[in-house]
Image 1: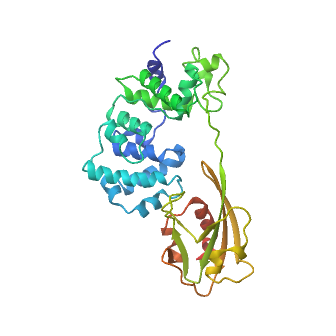
Image 2: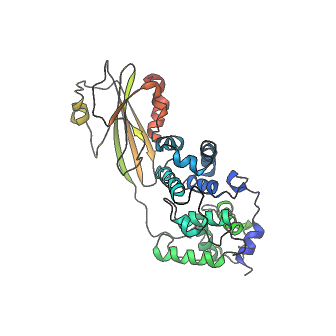
Length: 348
């Protein structure tokens, strides 16, 4: 077989995807793009990347920003642990590396929220260091071309693919090689309906030869999603409304929400501890709406109960009483943001 890397590089056209982070070797910008694009489509992530670069053009600006501001700018992108880790890593760079993005793989991978793939991407794209990237696209390309049936989510599989990717890497042109294989997986060797007739490896591809295109790559574990029900109490009067910041090590940590009860199974307003706390004795709510949101491991059901009062009761300090007109200054999970978009005119 002709050199795997040589075929990739010959196929690759650097201008085929004219993306802003592909036009720079600034490690900070490359890192930011890699974090934003984790679990996110390019079309969705690009506006966020541009917004972050505009507001935080340097690591120092990001490190010194309040976390609430970072989360607000991230609002709607999901997987908020990425934003929290991004903020911590920026502070690490400021404190440990005097604000200069580290230039070795070991120092990069030591930063909060950066794994082997992201470290390899930054090291190769910014500094042209010989570290092979292994993401979903790379798993798919290598498993199909070389007919590897070891599960990609197993310890042995991760090790096998990482070793093969490093072995195939063009050590003189690691940046181009890495970009080429990821683009190839995204544009040609796609998960569904790959363009085998356009593939430079079609004559050697084991998956094509053995009719296993739809089988490879193999995953050992089947994802089972849990279902959760959040009951939100939208408590407001003519001027103010109550919100609360999530502090638990759970989804949406650091984001804001309305007073909430999470209940498994049937729920009745007459069993609600929160409603008992505020002495709400009505037999129904002013308005009720339900929304759904799908996360990677969970299905979220959000039920919103609007409670308009002449005067808000006093709640413990963990609840914030804010003016309704300022509610969009806070960062909310997508499911609450959707509710607010529907009901903002009514609430304010």
